[in-house]
Image 1: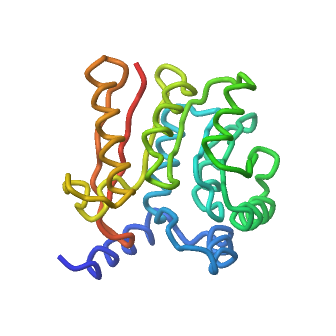
Image 2: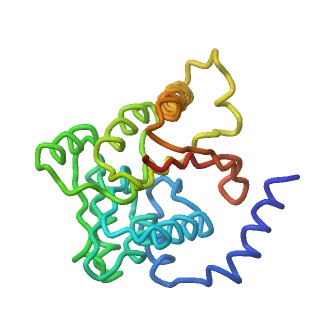
Image 3: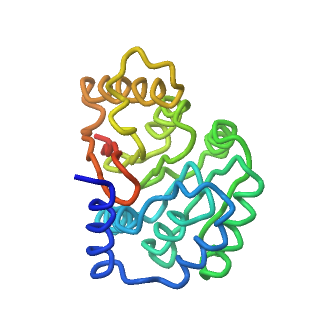
Amino acid sequence: MSTETWSAVDAWFAERLRPRDELLAGAVAAGAALPQIQVSDLQGGFLAVLARAIGARRILEIGTLFGFSTIVLARALPEDGHLTSLEASAEHARVARGNLELAGLADRVEVRLGRALDSLDRLADEQVEPYDLVFVDADKRHNPQYWAWALRLTRPGGVVVVDNVVRDGRVLDAASTDPDVVGTRELTDAVARAVSDGKVVATVLQTVGSKGWDGFLVATLS
């Protein structure tokens, strides 16, 4: 199968299940100068369905980019819900905040600027209420640390989703020195230990589509 076929299948389903959304299209246009590494429409739909299915009221997102997944997840929240998104790039945060304002979601989303590990440390110091859903889509080399923080900040029964864990199959390469592959393999080992200890139930969903061959790690806390 070619990537063209994967993309065509994505488009066929998205046309029917995820009709064109002008606000999301505008967010993509506003972020055109930034890396186009946001989730696809269908992947965003998966996140939204998951958030609604667990009745998420509080969401933590690690990695904002220009706010595509942020908007999708924030829309899945109830009126009294709140989403905190962590972004290291001032330019990314600026564009994302503009997109959230246009989407009418600025009142329920806080974009925190700064290194994610520092922001997570501050959230812990603030003794924030535990999160229902954590979506990790940032620099992959730090995924093991993000996972450790997610375990600490997520409520029992809550869900953690980590994007880009398959990496075109490169995750199988134990000899890789690519920091993203190394980080993903270390993340998987950490999740495996949590599974063995009975702390979480976890799985990985491989995905193919307009974003190529990749996958989500999904875990729920015991």
